[in-house]
Image (cartoon, rainbow, N blue to C red; front, side):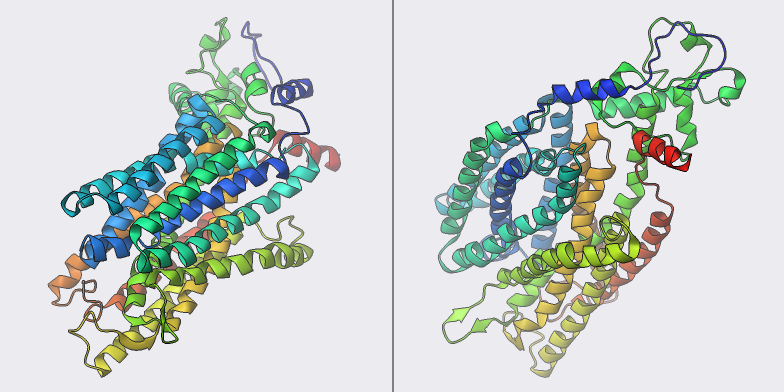
Length: 571
């Protein structure tokens, strides 16, 4: 702790290693808990949950258009709105987990709600009369969103928490965990696309949703079965209070120039020792917030610290971490817009094309998403076992490339996917014109559905880089007490991206209709979906340029222990 000026009666305490050891002893130090032995149970739960989610969401637009008879643009917006709400509500679920319930309890409660929602969905599509079905379906759908709100931000963070960061072996295992985690959920999603969507299209919606309900029931049972193996952490308090205190304290001391005026600096307190194992090193960015750690005359004369006037260095650096994440978060929103097309426009494109395999089998239109899953399933092991070790030899980085470089590659690939999709759609429309099918939207265009495979595969590759990178980025760069919020922030990229997609669809419809031809209509043969894809590709290119500029100036999390070690090496 650096101080200057007169001594203060305020109790100021430096961080000591014994404090870290005491904290570790409070967090279930038993080596029999945690690790892959515990994480595997949680991964299985997530695989089952993704099986249930994609078995429903992957074919949702088909149900809305074929069973509830919604126009394609309206159905696409309803899908985007639901996905958006389901991806934003985890912010609330993460807050409840971090501040009140803890991750384990939040996962348990939300899984019960999730299961009840799936039961209601199954009942709705099977026995509810048609004139009540739409209302009940959306009630059950948004009840599912409530279950997702607690499940999604906590389950991945809870699984990652099973690996200790003070163990070199477990830290290395955690580095690979995010790759294999995403592979696991891809397997669950792909299985749903192959099996459940086929059942929904060929056997019935009730049978399809019944399978999904059973999967969630098994997932909940497996989660409870691993109870004794988990490392569990209780609630750590409201993260919003920490952020608010720093801003209020900095504003109150906005007129103070710095320690040169004779004031001291509040470095550490007891709270730092009990709430986080790893203390953050001071950074030079956002220096205006550093005023919150300066001790003025009022602080020096007080017996007790007022947290709304004086914050610790670690607390200020945690807030800086959160603020540094925001620009990266914003630059990934258009990526989520691109990925949303997989479950909407890509699916409807496939519905107009030849999907028959042999004389007796017809591929369900939504099952083309399996090629996205297969691409991810093949690419992740190659990335983890081949690309990372090879890149490590050239870069010296433990992960081969930095997290932001990984995300940037995915953003670039998303642009390629839009360009490929636009070219394929132009080809499809050309065949439509040649066969005089412009005003026959229900006709099957004489073009094989396999033409869509490249755009699905490029989307899958971009997922491997950007979505997996975002998961690791928000877990690694978020303050330890806010990691559920970090997971929710990653999910909110998808949520806000889907809302933006709905807004873009509405705007494009309004502007294009003034020129006489709507780019997006219920008749895809008359629409100009290829123009829409080119527009998204152009916007994504501009977004990538902004992202590169932000990434170049980004400062990764710095730990006090690491900085001290570097200083000793230099000495």
